[in-house]
Length: 251
Ligand SMILES: Nc1ncnc2c1ncn2[C@@H]1O[C@H](COP(=O)(O)OP(=O)(O)O)[C@@H](O)[C@H]1O
Ligand SMILES: [Mg+2]
Image (cartoon, rainbow, N blue to C red; front, side):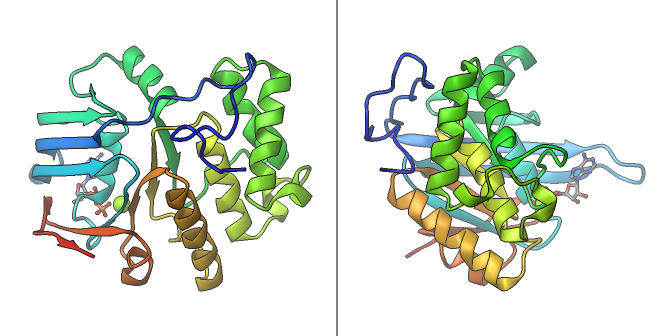
């Protein structure tokens, strides 16, 4: 079975399952002239100074750059979590900039899976419940949400951790669980901000391998990292410096 089935469905979704989004025709992400300035005590911080970026559907892009170069700001804007001050933001062919918060919440549920450095899991509940909850919040019936959750635990090698709480899992397992949660709603775009930043090198390799598998199955991924080793696992790398994307190297 495929990990990602919105590009080429492995099976027809049942009436109870999450409706798979259509494949992204052309670009999954298109940014033009994106600027973002934060007000700070001493002087305004120009976090993004005019970013153009195209991410084709199915790509696996790593965004590298030193701390403070604007990587997280970029990811948050693509996710519709933070507004651009100027420029246009298109995700899955849809304009994201200038939209109302209610629209953005729906947009995120439908199109965006988010993974963070520190997992952001619910500590008090099992691995299974960590995955059921987002499905239910997205409108799945509990039985369908549980079936999806169990599929993902299986596919991500966590089936024997189904009833464990995050605290007893290794860092790598926790991050795999967080990735499973991000995939519950079959997002158009998986966005990861320093997903290996809190892991030892073994855990980091595990996550990178998983991303490579997901990419192979058609998942579009944008991963922020400051590690050259981690970025080298992506299909394409762009570098940021001082709020700008540097001229690109394609491999
Ligand atoms: N909410 C905010 N308020 C004020 N300044 C911010 C905010 N978010 C980010 N910044 C500043 O914007 C710049 C870019 O930050 P960020 O995008 O987090 O960089 P990176 O993820 O590459 O480390 C930094 O100088 C940071 O301090
Ligand atoms: Mg950051």
